[in-house]
Image (cartoon, rainbow over all chains, first blue to last red; front, side):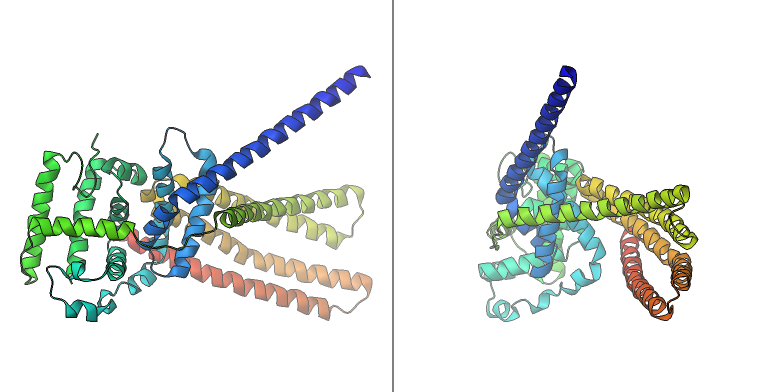
Amino acid sequence: MGNSVELALSQTILIKTTFSKVSSYSLNNQKIFTLWMTEYEKLLRHIITGFEAKPAIQDELFQEIALNIWRALPKFRQDASVKTFVARIAHNILATHVAKAVKTVKADHDLSDVNQEAEQDHIQPTPYQSLDQKQRQQRLGQAIRQLKLEQQQVITLALEGMSYLEISEVLSITTNLVGVRLQRAKLALTSLLEK
Amino acid sequence: MNSQTPLGEKGNTSQQHIETEQKTTKISNQSLDHLGKPEQPNEMLEADWLAMSDDWQSQPFDKVDISALLKRTKKRTLWAKSCLGLNIIATLGLLISFIYGLTKGEFSQPMNTYLGLGGLLSAIFVYYEVKIRLTTWQQCCDSPDKAVGNAIAGCQSSLKYILLTKLSFIPFLVLANWFVFAMTQANEKSFWPPLLFINGFMLTMYVITDWFHRKRKKELQQLLSITSK
């Protein structure tokens, strides 16, 4: 009789401990998720802009990225950088998005309708510099979305100030390849902005 | 390790990188000459890059309510897991009822046949669903270079699942019609209203499945055309 009471008691304690561990793990994850999303919201929003023009789809992509970050939280290794981890998940989603929606994305790529009047009014050293900041941001985003996927990937990360090493970690490529892709991306971007 | 900044304007820039930059600038200027534009000095391009970086980083964005986002995210995860869980429970329920019906002899023959075949088909569907969901959840941390390949694999899995669903309509249609007919005969009721309902319902489901089938096929073609380029 005494043994069965002890057994039941120890089982209850075990269940309670497991439950408390699970709920504290869940709470920890919620805190980490909130912290990460607050810290890297800007980075994510900017990266998304480089791949998608429509605000409604941008929001959907942001939600999709958030969902994948939440799911991937348990896989995060403490020795890795959170920034590269988050950016990697974002790029994973965005690469798939671009691949699936090439036609719709390309349809948004007509740079000719971006404030042509403003461009024509100024004959400055470069057309890009002659625009005001909002126009430049708009034009830069559209030019980036017109690049090849691999170029979009490196340029969006580079513009965020990431190092070659960080970009290579996000994209799982060598730093040399980052250099090569980035040079090509810069050339292509410059050429698009000169048009 | 190479840790210079990607834009090459600040920090410890290697000699090799400077040479590449210079080559790039030359190529860039050549391409501008080709377009009939004046040659730009290096500083101009560098200034453009700095301006671009500044513009990019100062882009405005609508701040999201993070606690609402957390709630939504948790809800979506829970919903996806619940759907899968419910399917598994329903399949187990069908199979257990079938075994119970067979051993205890509680149900009629049409009911037993319906439960048996329904349970079998449901088990096949759940197997595919678990496989697709697990693969999708495992791929979220893969390299972005694999994203297109993963999307193709995901699309192919979905297509198999959809095809299976479409093919299963034939046995399900026969089974459902026979079940309704047998049950109404046993209860001496008119079979037309339930028959019309069940066939109308299955037709609607087929049309929806077909719409998804076309959508996924289009996506797959799109993805394959990218990899073939």
